[in-house]
Length: 198
Image (cartoon, one colour):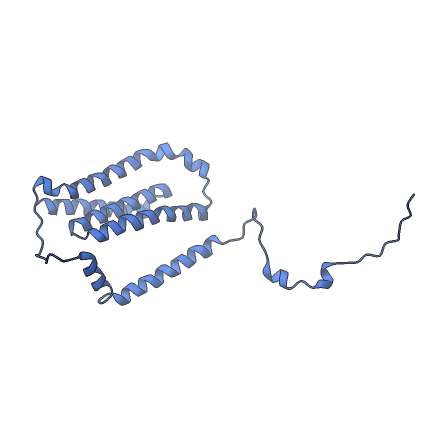
């Protein structure tokens, strides 16, 4: 069946992309493989008729990957000039990843043109998978959803704390030193003999 073949192909691509995300040494390659993994997961969700989840994954997480990549660049103090020099070296990999993502989207959207029929359970006319997702998420998985929210909050605070370090090329205020200052120590009067005009 066409649907089964597409599912196994996308699953294999997702596993390879996820493995390369954690094993690639170049941060640019890691980000590209992570984007490919997100697009492949979105394609699998489209096969499962979960359009809302697929669009949310692409819009939110693919956009967040770029922010994550910027955090990595800032935290590791990567030389941006050298990063730009490696643009043409990373271009073939980017073209391959983009081609695989384009093929996945075309394969999912063209399944009706090819003539493959999906086996789906009958649903009423007013059925909404977004409403069903919200009902299941906030009833059966409410505690897991709250725990995930707390973990994400801790991760955000940790990322901000890691980037707020003392740098030699910036100046900042020391509030404790300012509050500990005394008026007598700020101004010192020096007695000097008066000089006569000549």
